[in-house]
Length: 277
Image 1 (cartoon, one colour):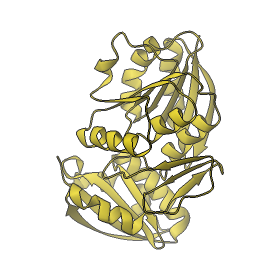
Image 2 (spheres, helix red, strand yellow; image 1 turned 120 degrees about the vertical axis):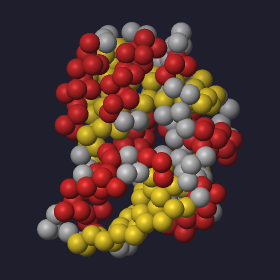
Image 3 (spheres, helix red, strand yellow; image 1 turned 30 degrees about the vertical axis):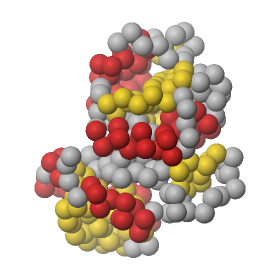
């Protein structure tokens, strides 16, 4: 298992600086973010980080913000203590809460308890937040569902809470695989099967709904596979890309029999839904 680099960014003014920085860092490969009163803490796998990554973060060169940062390497086993120190629960659309086990239970229809360790998917990042909104806004009763790039498993967990009858949650990262197993058990889910691997696992599989919150390049590569998994009228929900990436995403979807339905946009990130024709 890889260690992670933790970056503490101090930002003035904090907003919209934090939102812009999270968006740019997410696009560059940073996986997890925690917002605090003077900026953000961001995490990336040590082996994924190169100094030139930060050269592409435009806001760091902006005259409109003052940003300083320090970094340190942390072991994955230290993630829980960092999480407990920094994490605040979130509520999506007044219906769904995502919280840690030590937080007080809120008065929401759906209450998800997550210990993310180093997995992506706490609900704080715009992509996860919007995908949770898509799930809340759609009918999941008796659906078969794929959560591709499941991270913490939060999207699969809410899908089951909304009535999905059989779900597969897949992630290429071993840490995410193990973390999803833990969170599935923690939320008393009975219908979620968790696998470690890539889209190669989808050969011959069929689902009513496919959810994929990954990144632009993987989505463009795997959309044809997702389409083969869907029947006519099946739904595909995608996120992990910017608004300017929509034409490229939509083009590949159209070529694979998927018609654009609608989208959500937050901090220039997009979560779009498609239907199989």
